[in-house]
Figure 1 (cartoon, protein in one colour):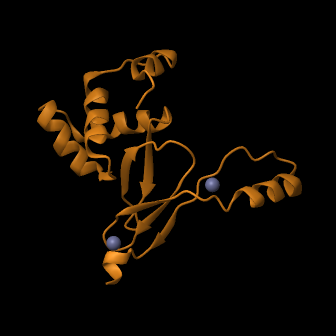
Figure 2: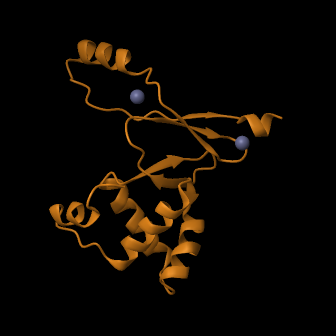
Length: 138
Ligand SMILES: [Zn+2]
Ligand SMILES: [Zn+2]
């Protein structure tokens, strides 16, 4: 991550607390989608005594700052990873919860149509897909 993280926090009037730093470090070290329980376990290795609720709030702040993205899993849980460069659509495996990044965007033409039909200039969208990954189909 090339951006100066501390200044991103300060611009929003937020503190780059040790907890937020630890959560970010866990995600930076893993480069994969992690469940909140796994993130919590890893954060506790850096900062023992950090509660699950604190980890959850730190993650939500990082999502708001667009440093982290959240995917919805089929069981209603979420997993988190560092925000990728550029626009992606996550495909979540319904069996193992692995996430595959789809870089093509099929929604842009649809956004234009929606903008035209509704008179609302569509600025952004979130699309996530579900399916069984190659390994789980084997
Ligand atoms: Zn799978
Ligand atoms: Zn898209």
